[in-house]
Length: 336
Image 1 (cartoon, rainbow, N blue to C red):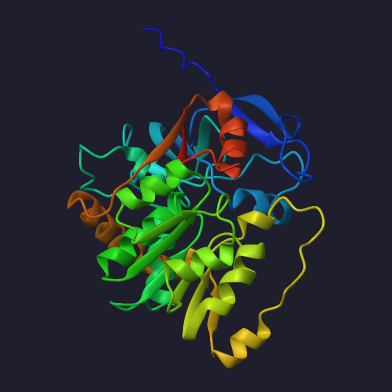
Image 2: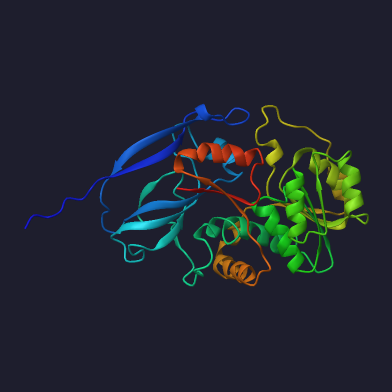
């Protein structure tokens, strides 16, 4: 009896053709193909189902990648073939596989989906609210800001994957939340989520006046996603002993000339502020319990999720650039 021959899998991958100069452009990316062999002992063959595009990819590409590398990123993938008993055929995993349609993996760094993932929740939430962005929001509030009931919180880029989760968790914890976003539609969304105040930073006459009006007594906590001028304006409005969690600085990622001052030292000193940058992986030992808390809030209807889904792996660069332009409300996802 003749053995059936395995059909070779042709994998596609988006690579960094040229380092980004200012805002990324189509010619900075290159789509490549390769044939993948069958898995060896301990290996699995994965097929991407959902892929994530995130702001961190822009600065990380400069410091973590060289030209020709596959673009970094996380995906939800299905196991097509397996010679690793930890990952049986048909199961889904989360992995830092980059912008690839298929990946041959030895299993290192792969994380199985939560065993009791509810059938009524899309797997893509593992890249958003019940994934890295959700953990970033949770750890920034709890570990960095140590936020307490009754406190006031300011969050910018508030309609994005992290910001929208930050605001909702703060409301769950009994805080007053002010959010800024870049369109009237996004402001309406924030109000739907229960933000106490929200405004469009692009249309207000004065950012300082908008922030003061939204919280006349100032802010106990500030969840920073934007950097630049916004941070300079917000800093003087912090209350004494305020805490600032620095998660991102998306307004500065595409600068060719570094932005300069004003500088914040006097505010830090006289108000005795605490300002701390962080990456969520610092608390990865808490991830499973934290993901289950996030999932429970979603199931209870206390934490709402919105996704901006782009169809087709061929549109990865467009989805990435659209996210950097702020075209998404909620988590930007690509369905492979």
